Image 1 (tube, rainbow, N blue to C red):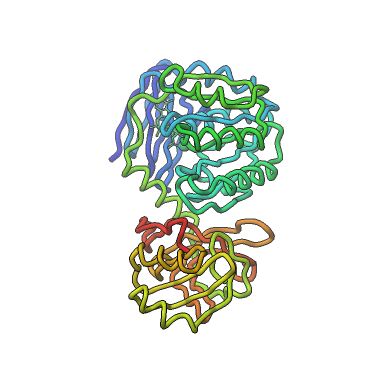
Image 2 (cartoon, rainbow, N blue to C red):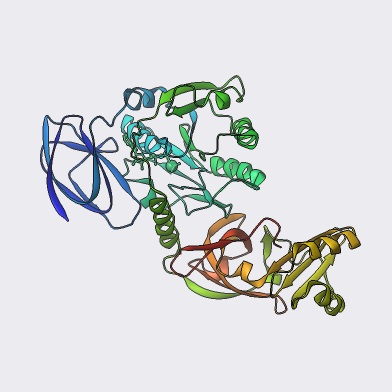
Amino acid sequence: MEKEIELRRGEGILLRSPLRFEVLSGEVESWGVTIDETSVDLEGVELLIVSRSDVSKLKVDGSFGRISNPIPEWWLNLPEKIVGKKVMLIGRVDSGKSSTMLYFINKIVSIGTNVGIVDSDIGQSDLGPPGVISSKTIEEPILHTKILKPDFMYFIGDKTPNGHFLPMIKGSIEALKAVRSSTVLINTTGFVDGGAARALKRFKAEFLEPDIVIAIERKEGALDHIARSLPKDIKVYKVKSPVGKSAKERSYRIAVRRSLLRKFLEGSKTLELDLSSLELRNTYLFTGESKPDYIPFLETVLGTKILWLEESPDMLIVLTEGLPDRRKIANIADLLHKEVKVGTVQHYNGLYVGLLGKGRCLGIGILESIDLNKKSVRITTPVHERNIEGLAFGYIRFNANGEEIGTRGMNIP
Ligand SMILES: Nc1ncnc2c1ncn2[C@@H]1O[C@H](COP(=O)(O)OP(=O)(O)OP(=O)(O)O)[C@@H](O)[C@H]1O
Ligand SMILES: [Mg+2]
């Protein structure tokens, strides 16, 4: 619904897309740049609109909340200090990492230099699709990172870094290499508590070698444990989160992920791909020898129909119709002295995948069905078939609407 509102100097609104707005009088900025009017249809985009005049009048359409003093001092002072530097942003979920990134991008390009961004927050991505590390070099002020196209993508395929530490590090290094600017802003996941989180942040810092870490705290000292776990030569700026109570609801986070997924699946076609000619990542399938002779015996032991069975020196890989009892799987593992990885065909229905080519992630797709005997898959993706050289299996499953319907655990082949 369209509304006319007034903002005093320094007052702002956070306006959520789908949105439309127009300045009727006065001067306003959005994420630090002057703006007169705009519209965004893509869901999941937030604009922070602030009055630069004593009074500004706007016409807005979209849901919004008022904020009395949205721009913290450090948003104004820090950007010029970090030109020419590599900067990593850390903070818990909803601390304002992405908002800081946006404001800083616009401040830095308005100084007249370009800026590289690396988005390694796979849970709530700002640049690439969900579960993908991405990067881009930015030369001009932007409305929002979510409406840009990344220069580089690395597929992780999950919402959390748990179980994917090596790909997280590798992806971040590659994304950083693809940037063409000496000023770089690196966004990270909100995963900051516990031994695993400390290790990931420490090694990310060791590999990416940031000059500066900006620790965005909602409470004084809330990130000291991370700051103290980092290499000593990194300068840490501790700053206070500008976020009030206006944290994102869970339903909004889900809607944002769905919207980004749909954006990166736009123009998709369903392709039938031959798995034997593709390089496969994040799966154990086709690393062993097919053993059809074992099937009748194992079907009796597991009590379900077996659709595929292969063996390698370290592993038995089984695909079944129904999921057998864990104890039965453990018994076979004991008997064979090797790991037994069992999955059902359902674990692959709607599986999130990355399409690879020339050593890069070319785009994302959804696996519709898999036929292991024909060694083929049907995948819905906007990526052109002729460019596809590999397939990275993800760990989340989606329906045709882009809604999450399940996962594929780390133990599923
Ligand atoms: N300057 C501000 N003042 C008040 N509220 C803000 C400000 N900037 C952002 N917010 C609100 O805080 C929320 C969280 O901000 P943001 O998305 O930048 O955090 P984040 O740390 O990137 O979160 P995530 O963990 O989801 O990636 C935003 O959705 C917005 O509603
Ligand atoms: Mg964020």
